[in-house]
Amino acid sequence: GENVEQHPSTLSVQEGDSAVIKCTYSDSASNYFPWYKQELGKRPQLIIDIRSNVGEKKDQRIAVTLNKTAKHFSLHITETQPEDSAVYFCAASIRGQDTGTASKLTFGTGTRLQVTL
Amino acid sequence: EAQVTQNPRYLITVTGKKLTVTCSQNMNHEYMSWYRQDPGLGLRQIYYSMNVEVTDKGDVPEGYKVSRKEKRNFPLILESPSPNQTSLYFCATKRGTVGSYNEQFFGPGTRLTVL
Image (cartoon, rainbow over all chains, first blue to last red; front, side, top):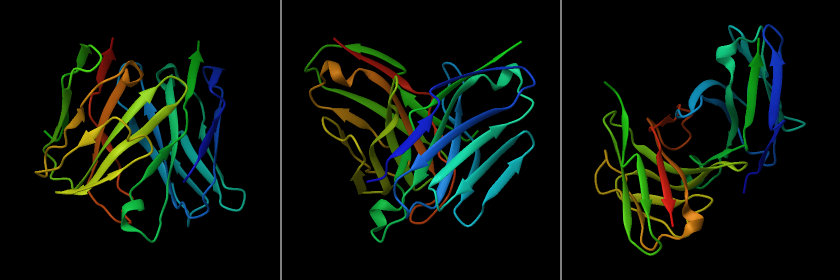
């Protein structure tokens, strides 16, 4: 099955600096890559996603890049703010011939981002 | 208001005592799923359901059962809980099924402790 690795596990940046979180996936059939943000004590929420037919996607201070050849994708947060402090999860969705595998979502182990003043 | 609800939110139980965690959604979503979240391991999928009466195993199904008798509900059943099932559990839903890229909406979570 799919395996998603995420690095780093913790990341501390100063307010205003950029943060980058990287993920790699194993199954070249994966074609959907969402990023979820989980604030302390809260549920995960989608912040951005990218499909395999796109190399980069941007939404205000957040951007995601995808390198299909290398099988890795990254989350970039610019001009970080204290409210960006949270755990971030990447994920990959396998698209197989079997309908049962088309909706399987495999998550990375998470990155705890701390934005300091 | 569109929402996913889980009950109970917190539960402390003992080994071997059967329990059910309920999940309900009012968004008419076809797809529902259960995850467990453990420190350092991220979110791991337990079971998912593409539609009523259609369920399939995720990555860590051992020790769990599910059922999908109606669209809005997807209960998670632990027939004989063990301490290694102590975890934070999330139910999630999304609109589509096969080949769909829809966002997954998570419930508030259920923190389960098995003594």
